[in-house]
Image (cartoon, rainbow, N blue to C red; front, side, top):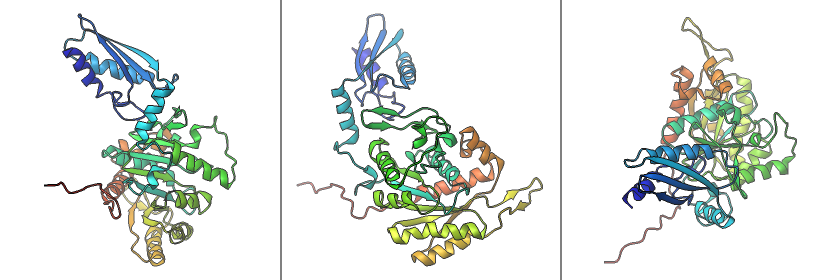
Length: 373
C-alpha cells in the first residue's frame, strides 16, 4: 500500500503535454496495480484514441514511476476515455462549463497583446514569436493566436509540425518552446491558400478564442494581419481589453502606414501598449552600424500616436537587422532561445518590460468577505 501511494504521488508530477496539468488531476489515471515483487502496472486513459503524444505520456510515466525505490518494473497500458469521462474533463477544464471567450471575461487576468503593423514585411510575426518565447522562458504561461489567416507563419516560425488534438468540440493547441499556439495553418494541407471573405475570418478567430483550450495564461499574443481590415475590427469586438503593439521599420513611409494601424485604437477604444522598431540597423564586421532603412521612424511614430491618443506611447525597443534572427525563424527556433546576439538581447528586454507591467485589478471581484468573530 505504501508503494502504491508513492506511485500515485509520482504520477502527480507527470504533466499532460497538451493540457499542461498533472494526469492525476485530469482523471487520466484509471488504475494502479503493484505486485509483491515491485512490478507496477499503470492504466492511463487518453482523451482520444489517436492521441499524438501517447508515446510522450508513456515515457514520462515510466520515468516517474521507475525512479522509485522498490519498483522493479513499470508497464503502462493505454485506454481511451468514455464520452462521460470526456464531458467531465471538459467541465473540469472550463470551470463553469460555459462556452465563451475566457480572455474577455471581466475576471480574466490574462494580458492580451495584439501585434499589428501598417503593412507586411516589417517582421511582425518574428517579433511576436520571439516575445512569446522569451516570456515563456521567464516562467510565464504564454499563448499565441495566429490571426493572420491569409499569411499564417507562426507554425513554421515556432517549428510546429504536430496538429492540434480535438476532444469533441474542444481543441488542444500544440506546445513549442513552452508556448501554446494555434493557427489556421495547422488545419490546411501543404501550402494551400485561404480564400475567405470577412464573415469567415471573424468566425475563424471567434472559434480559436472559444474552442481552443489554452488554460490559465499570463499573456496571450495575437499575430494580426497587416493593415486595418476585418480581423483588426473583430479583435476589438471579441477582445475589447486587448492592447495594441505596433511594429514598424525605421523609414518614414513605413511609419506613415503604421500610424494608421495605431490610430485604430481611437476608434475601437483599445489601448496602445507601445511601438517596436524592427530592422533598425545592420551591424557591420567593423562594428559600425549601417542604417539600411533610414532612422527615426519608430520615434516619430510614437510622437504622432501620442498626439492622436492623448497619452504617452512608448518606443519599447529597436531591434537590429541580423542573420541570426532570420536563421532562427527558418529553423523554427526563435533567436531568443540560444543567442546572445544584439537582436536577441533587445527582444528579451522588450519581453521583460512587457511582463513586468502590472495588471490593474479595478472592478475585479476578489470574492473576499470578512470573517465573523
